[in-house]
Image (cartoon, rainbow, N blue to C red; front, side, top):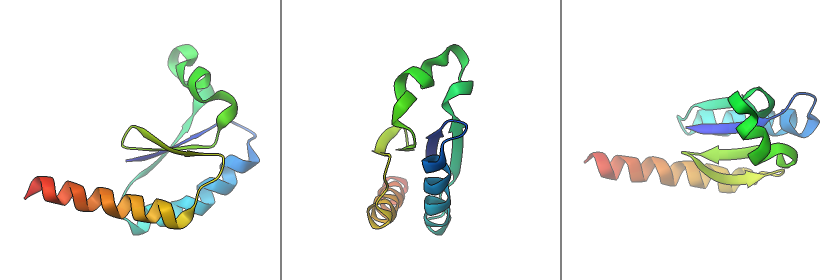
Length: 88
């Protein structure tokens, strides 16, 4: 699961979403866009606040502000291969 932490009115967030959406789809993963300002108790806003956009893969922070498309594709491919090894 790939999560993109965003906040309303964030132009960089929209740009990164458009950048990573096809990469995530090509990897066969799911993208969940999360508005950090809408989290219960404001926990996500405190954690990610001014650092959005933040890409989180399987609960681990991958990048903030900028995303290297090639590194993201490699990370998703490696994660998929690792998951396949655990299943066999």
